Image (cartoon, rainbow, N blue to C red; front, side):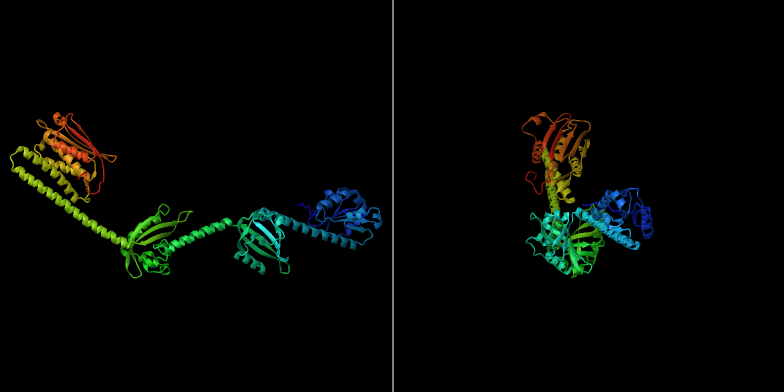
Length: 612
């Protein structure tokens, strides 16, 4: 690109400057006197013209020959701006032997020319300079614009609307990068060459219509790069009109919006899928303002409530809610208003009024929709489904369960009563017998039956019919044993038990073990001992494993009992029950007797052959 040198700086004020490089003083004074006042005059003969700033120079032959190189260099450097040089001569014969000078100066003036004519010639030269300055400024602006156009990544073309087929006459670097074509391959073609064989597009027809009507417009059209790669081109065109109002050119601005189009297509596909799901969902999907007003409802509302979407829009969801449920549902939803960003969903069940006036049970899952930037609550989104059938099943199941619980309570009560009858019969047998050995056996059986009866009594009095609070049971069991055993008033029994709840299938064998161990200790551990004895019962839990200890400070268990293969009835029962619990057992016989066993808690449902 050319770098223009402008010689339009004014030497004096704002007036155009004329340099008088004339050797004779009289000639300089005469010319200066007659030059119009709107020019500034510089008189200089000793200073090189290259050091001066002027718009026009009048010189004589003597000065021209002296500064010829400077004058010519100034003109060369000023191009394309016109720097006029006028030569003053005596007559034309003076240049007879210097024809080159005719081509080096812009005007030759004979001294005899009237001053008026000289001023006309000066005005003509100044006018030419002014026009050249305007053109130079416009060229500079055009050059800047061209650089700006080429520096953008946007593709820009200009077409000639007055030529056949509206050919491209300009394309910027951005268009070359966008399409892959060189400027030589682009210029002269109609821009439809980018469509290749895919010209039957609505967007292409729209662009052709805009060009035909000379209108501004925009369209997204599929084009192809030089290597055949398709891309989506956002094309904006605008007509350029000449002085007569006729369209002379079109400017086209092009952007590669392939990624945007693909994202929009993906969003549209996703939106279509969501719409398909929502419009065909049997659940009622809705959006609500913060006060509950319907902002959007799916068509399924007609199936659920009998209302069309238009009938629900703008109405409040709480108006269709049973009055007894409104407060509860509103309370449940407060968490969405207070902590929308930290809350996932809120699930509520309530009765909803249909168009017929009937109330149906529904379940609604609500979610807070928030602004991702600053987390304010925007709206509530809800998914509502009819659970009337499920509610009926739940109510029927609840009634059946209640009936079952009553039945189980009655069973436990009757089992307890039957065990009491058996215990009573054994007691009658015991009272009517004088056989001490038989009475002892009957007494042990009565104690065992009472321990089981106590379990059933606890169960039918408790909220749970399958689990037993074992701490309370042990305390009652100890109290019951002390009442049935002789000499129990001389024995202290200490119970140290965690708050443990046992399944009935583990509670029964565990209770029988405790009954046997405590009864045996009361009966045998303190024989012949004068001071009061003590029994310690410990029941602890650690990592779902239960640890049980029954310890006394009595005389200890005889070695022949521990060593014999034929164990006593009490030990046989204990060993059998410990196997049923899959427990680990240990008996210590130092300074009294301690029976220890541990087992893993199991929540066995129903009757279990191992335990029952």
